[in-house]
Structure formats: C-alpha cells, structure tokens
Image (cartoon, rainbow, N blue to C red; front, side):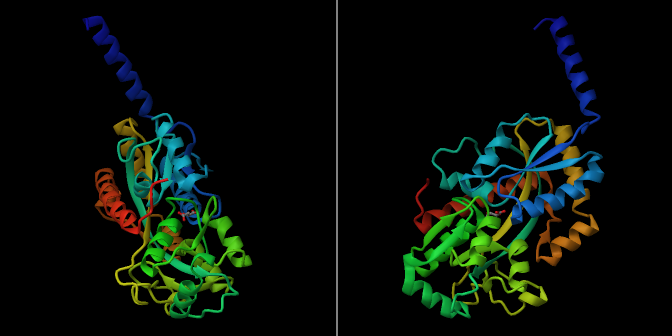
Length: 324
Ligand code: MLT
C-alpha cells in the first residue's frame, strides 16, 4: 500500500474515531427476543430506563420474538456494528447452540459482550384449579398423568423450556410442551387453566403468586426467595430433586466488530445503570440479584457465557433432548 493510501486510511480512521467520540448521537435500541410483558422484556425496560441518563439518549426496547429467542438474537448478530442495536438476552444465549442444528449466528464469536446484568431465580407454577397443594402431591399427579400434562414454555431454548426439560428428566416423564412467543402470553393461558404448569422467572411469577392467580409449587433456583410472600415455597432441591438449579441470568450484547471505544462507553453506561437505586429496588423486590463482579466486565461476561455453554450442553445432552 503506497504512502497516499496509508495517509488516506489513517485519515478515515481518524474521522471515524472522532465521529465515535460523540457516541451515542441518536437513540439506542435494545432488542428483546421474547414477547412484551415477559420477564426478559421487564428487565430490558428496567435497564433501558436506567441507561437513558448515562447515555444521554433515548433507549428504545424492541420485541423481536420467535423460535425460543433465536430470531431476535440473530437480528442483532446481523445488525450494524455501531453500538445502536443491542441485545438483552438470558441463558438462551448459551443454550441455543446445543438446541438448534441450524443457528444463523455463532456464540460467542458473533457478539461483543457488554456485561452481565442480573441473576433471576425461577419458579414452578401451576394453574389455580390444580388439586395438588404441594410439590409432593404435584409430583404424584405428574407421574400418573405423564404426557397428558400440558407444560407451557417460550419456545425451544427459552429459560422456561430448559427448566421444563430438567424437570421432566428428573421425574422421568414426558409432558406435552406448549410453546408461546414468551412467558407473558403463556401466563395468561396458565391463569385461565388452558395449560397446567410452567417454569417462570420470579420477575413475572411473584406478582401472580401473590395475587393467587397461579399456584406456587417450588423455586427452581438453589435458594428460596427472600421475599415474605415466597418464604414458605421450597426449592426443588429441598423437594427431592437433588441439585436441581435453574437460575436465569441476563446480559447485554452488541454485534461483533462494534468498535472497542463504543463497547467501553456502553459498558460504563451499563455499570452506571446497575447502580440506579430505583432499578436496584425494583429488581431486588422481585428476588433478582444485580451483578457486581467480574462478569460485569466484557471479558468476564464472555468467559462466563462460554463456560455456561459447556455446562448447559451437558445438561441438554443428558436430558436426551435432540437438537431442533
Ligand atoms: C420471557 O421473557 O418470555 C422469558 O424469558 C421466556 C423464557 O425464556 O422462558
């Protein structure tokens, strides 16, 4: 390359860095790969609200649903790597590669990691008309009814699907799964009695449990929820399913190739957002834990998701679930 081209290239690079010095100059979009009103959507809207001040721009949430969250995730993988289209996603980021033969994106290579947001406990809930009043009674009913039991989820690869997979594997049953575009629409059918059971993140489940619109049978995470209304709800591990633990983490992502100075700005803004007292109050009131360790750094976030891919690939293999 001759000296003129080098000078031109350096000049263009300089213009590009200078232009990014003002990033963000327009609204930033957070893509959520599940339906509005679900736990992923609620967490994304919470984070969007808290990002507005540190970014000094509007932050818009856009729900792109379908295929257990892989359609919205693929959309961000293909988006311009300019920091204006980001993804809020959960453990599905780590599990989809083991559940889908043909994914149009690769994890971790097709993404930049902007920081892990929180860990959300999950619950096992049932329609209000179920006769069982404890997990022990429910376990007996599930085993007796097996494939006649309708288990709702948000599609293959969703947190509710993975939790359901582990539950069926632990009980040695094969329930009929009913997929939705998110657990928000599924919750409506559960409360209406159209489906029998669902694993749902505490973010969405606690309100309906407190309103007695669904029955709480267990917490699927390792620890009970520290909320007064949930103190008596045992974990599945306490209820005889040893080592059962489905905790749903959520992270923030950008397309591969997003400039490092933009990644640094977005990570700084996320760290500031997660210190927002209103966000902390809202999320902790639902039993969520805000991340405040090395996983909030891009490198730590990427290392964690990569390790989770290996862990979940084994769980999925052991469950006998064949890739879609
Ligand atoms: C949702 O937001 O609908 C849930 O996170 C879906 C799921 O993963 O179960």
